[in-house]
Image (tube, rainbow, N blue to C red):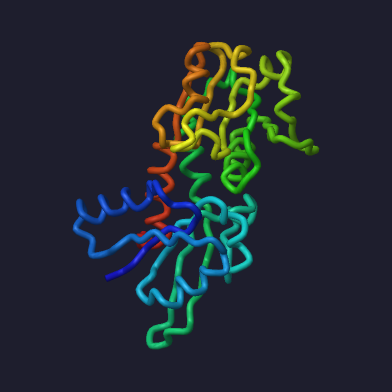
Amino acid sequence: MNTYGLIGFPLKHSFSAKFFAEKFRCEKIDAEYLNFEIEDIQEIRHIVLFNQHLKGLNVTIPYKEQVISFLDEISPEAQKIGAVNVIKVDRKPGDMYYYRLTGYNTDYIGFKQSLVPLIDPGSHRKALILGTGGASKAVAQALTDMQIEWKYVSRSHRDDGFTYTDLSPEILSEYTLIVNASPVGTFPQTEDCPDIPYKLLTPRHLLYDLIYNPEETLFLQKGKAQGATTKNGREMLELQAVAAWEVWNPIDR
């Protein structure tokens, strides 16, 4: 039986495990999906070596960037993005010590496909990306490819972005797409939200939260109260999971 899994920390409420368990059950696929909660990325070597039927891994916070140095190869798309959320494991029959790891980024695919239907080209020309971790890099690349200008928002100053205290009425009126790519607001910290001036939001704004648990974060609630369009990360995760399966099990065309 083939094994797939997820590495990250913590993994208390994993979307991937539930998604793939349901997929395997419905499609009668003889496989299992395991959560590998690791406190150090070095443990990936142990996971791959001692799970001889492991065919693929998903990667989540905080390892989407750290894992790159452990890979033998990385796809051009993931290289450009600078983050990996899917790993394909290839082995040599009869040699338990040989394996080859190739990294991909399907966050990009999931985010872009789920965002496109919501975009109003006349209104959503500039975006703010809240957070600067691995997930934010896929968001940034997707926006670039959609010809949407973007800036990061973080607590400290950086050349390619703003700080939260920089967010003035002028900036919020110009940047009408706001993407939360940070973990702020994730269950169980549901009373937290990114520190942006929500009172400056309008019906012209589109708020997208990569978080899916809870279904409606405080970030989205506050945006909706101002008339903004909102979307959570559930569809993105489903789309990226489907793309991950296609990486692990390519269909000959």
